[in-house]
Length: 389
Ligand SMILES: *Cc1c(COP(=O)(O)O)cnc(C)c1O
Image (cartoon, rainbow, N blue to C red; front, side, top):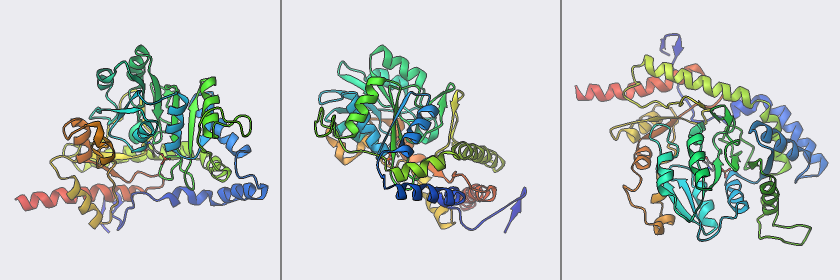
């Protein structure tokens, strides 16, 4: 064990340890699930309603509709907005697959926008360039826990009468200019995938809106378009949040503010540690824009000069977990080849895919673990210099 500035190195640092946040809630979560089990009511019911109301309040919206995943939330949002073949929907390419697949599932055309290289979020300048008479909607993604520039994006969308769907899968609790994610768009999509800031014990999702008629359509589409029973108004899907999941999530929600504060504290500590190690110019550290309340689902550095994969391997060999979100941009995926994008189509996205690396930031991560991560990265660059010298 080496100790510098009061920190000690540790042998292993996992990218994510869900158990550290869940552990102290074990009794509470199991008791809540037991209540649902004993009630025999596994779908709908009070736990789901409670979670919907809590999330609507947190997002500054009037309604929230629970569904089976964040991916379904995106699909339902576009269905409720009436997106259909012939329509164009503008989405970033630097995001998880589900943001774009929802568009193509409905037969509409995906139009990929490039990103701001600092925040990795959709570049508003790109949005205005890509709008055509067929454009119906735009899906800004709040990547890594930081909102896209919603003031600028909304202004452009409103001018062109586009619907705005916020993909807040990674950003529950984030805000832009003090307005929460969920308060900007027509519809906002949230995911409870276990790695998200509010993660369930399995899959889950939520759609948030303040529009009364959209709320009705979202509920209709999520329940086979059936109303009343066995009469189908539209062709919907079956997408519900299990009561067991909702029960667990209601317990976990009591800790969300604390966990968000932990993530923010961890981000600030990385910032200090990287500066102490003199690495702040070698790497590009993540930037929380002024106006953003960043909730740090990921702490993502940029590793220049083609060294990203070598650094990632070095970290793995030295017991430090890391991950690349996302290594292959969506516009270059095989399934979207017919859209005609090429390498070079979206330069900021492609550069980010080659350079980003996400480091452990989860609640419960210790200062010694963070110190270890930074020291291992320091070791990687020191080794390179000694070889060069
Ligand atoms: C996780 C995620 C989704 C999908 O959520 P699931 O619950 O896993 O279906 C969609 N968009 C983004 C940006 C995500 O990070």
